[in-house]
Amino acid sequence: MSNPVVILGSGQAGTSTARELRKAHPDIAVTVISADDCSFYAKPTLSNAIAAGKTAPQLVVTPAEKLAEQLKLTLMPHTTVESIDIAAKQVMTDKGPVAYSKLVLANGAHPIRLPLTGSGAADVLSVNHLSHYSAFREQLKPGMHVAILGAGLIGCEFANDLRAADHAVTVFDLAPQPLGRLLPPKAGAFFAEKLSAAGIKFEFGTSIANVDKDGSGYLLSTADGKQFKADLVLSAIGLKPAVELAAAAGLKINRGIAVDRKLQTSAADVYAIGDCAEVEGLVLPFILPIMNAARALGKTLAGTPTDLSYPAMPVVVKTPACPTVVSPPAMGAAGAWVEEDVEEGKGVRALFKSADGQLLGCALLGEASKERQAIAAQLPPVL
Image (cartoon, rainbow, N blue to C red):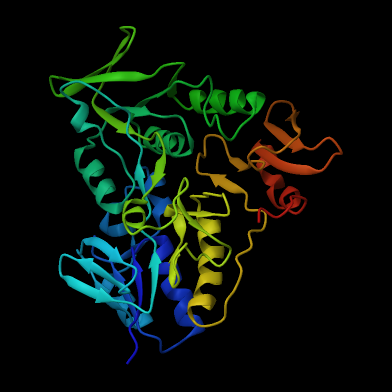
């Protein structure tokens, strides 16, 4: 009997790969190794579940036992992978070696942490897994004031959700606007205005350097001495691809684990997908890229080598206070933003166009977000 396809990680990327592989090959042996219990949940729900009153168990879509039965998987939950032996084609775990015929790295990303000092620095929370959400929910009490470090996509989604649940929220960011990497200035100002009107407070041009315990809460300080109080502190600075295992195994690493359009790494029979992977220079930690990648990789693992292609994939930002859709232009794209108001200040349509008028990206806010499908149809494929 040949060794199984082994998938490291049971998140969106790992589970989606297992599903697509099973569609393409009903009988191939598949083993999933995970540090958690292998139950499946949709990670995007973590940033909009508080207002809905959802507990961590309620976010589970498919329990591990049911998933194993549905997809005919061998699951190794609560297992730590210590190393990968490329030559021997096996992974070393705290439960012993596991041989593979093909290996898929789907081990996600780590939250980026600011180099905070102070007696409360270790208490600063991040939410990147279901267990993190559970810990956050356990500490979050009605009416608490939550400080959020980072006004990017995840920070703003959590801010909207917490405010909708009647929490006071202050968001800190060194940038002059929210969603600084996704929105041009006019769109950024409109977004900030709408979220501010919903009761979210922004402190732009501000970076927290120190978090001290202050009674039952925390005192946040900037390097120049400004101080703010909060009951809980949530860090949402961003994510960094988890590349440690791959790097130690000698695989090529750039920003993420470098893979080609078949998701293959620099080693034969070793693939990477999801937040840990860099596909021809692209690191896209969003659901649509993962689903497209899983469909291609499932076929490749089943014996039909398939190149990944990315269509235009607009991202819907989960901020009901300001409906927003973004499809940023490729890094380094030559062109300029053209921004205009929609329906007398009810929205902003921002289009990134090349010198010859080709549409390369967009940001649609408020009423303009309803144009998502029509404008997405005009966008070029990402890959």
